[in-house]
Image (cartoon, rainbow, N blue to C red; front, top):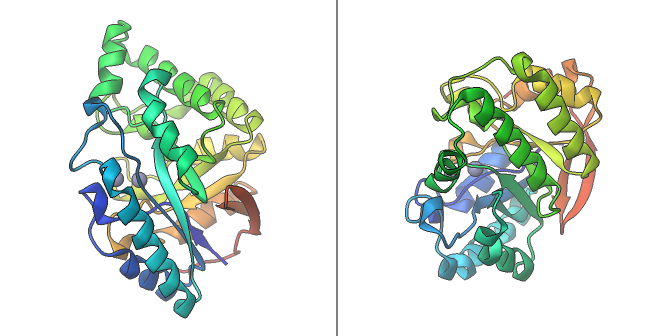
Length: 275
Ligand SMILES: [Zn+2]
Ligand SMILES: [Zn+2]
């Protein structure tokens, strides 16, 4: 069986298709479990508002949409999980409202994302006087590791997102092998998974996030993985999962995880998947 634990709803303002359509797409592709993970409401404008994420007063609607999708899932043998894509950010003061939402909602699954193109993060880099790529790349992996250690998140979404969106020039992960491996050890020790996110194949890097070499290091270090398409439209559910599975298998990975009511469920990675 397969799970896709990263997909959006139109509430974020940049995704299309009703959750029910995502469930049908999952059923068509033989995906047995999906977790919706729309972008969490944030208070500060620096994280973007309309067009980036739902408002806080839309949370009950989000909950209801996922509940309806869950009902529909029964007819299609697709288990629907209630998740959220939360923000990783190095200043705790920005996360108080988010923390209240995480405490109040009964999420099955919490993804952690450090969205470095946000003005909140870029302004912070600037205030810290970090201008050269090497310093920014080190800081990014440091901030992401520290985020994992807070215990808020079950898995880190698209962990090498710093490769895209022009905060730095794309780089060879091998040039930062020491830093990235240190980051991976901290994530492993915190008991947090790494997401294999196939949306990178549709973006400028044309690679899975994280890059294959990072998946290889993570596998050697014994990290656990979740799988996510980061679908912002129904057609993208399970996109390139065949490639992801092939890559993970090549790295010796034989299992993956998803989360239900915050508890990890471990499953065997299929040997082959045609999509
Ligand atoms: Zn999004
Ligand atoms: Zn996402």
